[in-house]
Amino acid sequence: MVAFGSPQVVADRLREVGYLPTDEIATTIFLASVLGKPVLVEGPAGTGKTELAKAVARAWGLDLVRLQCYEGLDESKALYEWDYRKQLLALQSHDDDLGSVFDEAFLLERPLLRALRMTSDRLLLIDEVDRLEIETEALLLEVLAEFQVTIPELGTLAATSRPLVVLTSNGVRDLSEALKRRALFLFLDYPDPERERAIVLEAVPGIEASLADAIARFVASVRELDVKKRPSIAETIDWARALVVLGADVLDRETVETTLSLLLKHRHDIERVRRELLGAASA
Image (cartoon, rainbow, N blue to C red):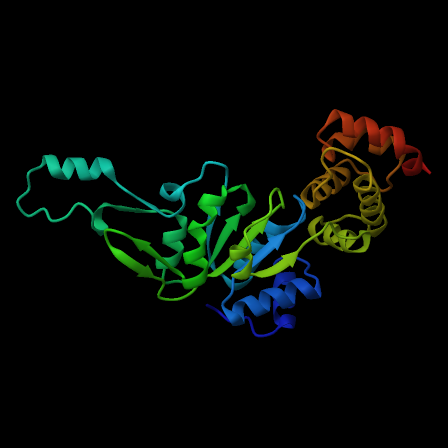
């Protein structure tokens, strides 16, 4: 695994690729690279967890291997499976030179096994790990503790070098203590208005600082309401870009009214914000 030098180096490199880290984020990523430990990044949806992993990969030129977790994901999609069609064709060929049909030639690598066996510097992103069933989560324990997997027909396959591993969780369910013990923990909450203002300024070329400030503060107010889906950082950026395209330089009531659906995606949420915040937005 590539060691990242220092927390300050991590912070500088992430800024260079457009990700604005806090000191806690930079320190945790640095320690993960030095200690060879996975990082479990937990927080509400839309707080930049996946983007952090992508930014680290971009900053160091790491190959990114992503396992997108979902309910029903099993070993055959996460780790490996045998190519049964190829095995069947091989058996039907009656080739006298055919050895076992359970060797490398018939093995289909899935993201976890692929990440372990690659020889390049890489980052393994295990995204939304909380969507896995507990039984499937257990598959990760050997990978994250020993950086190896055991295939009954082939034995134990160990990584020649350790990838940097980032797991993300939206906190939909509690993860097992066994999984948590194997990782450094980093909690990402929604940014405060000052940090979100800086993120918008970084991500939206040409936006006025005063408009970025108004957007960040309005979004913070929306997140304090009892809405079904609080705006993500990505939705804030999309909204800001749209306002720039429309030539807006202030966040007045009319501008918010006509573009609110870019920020909120549920009718109930839009109606609540119109009812409870638009007076403040137009002040």
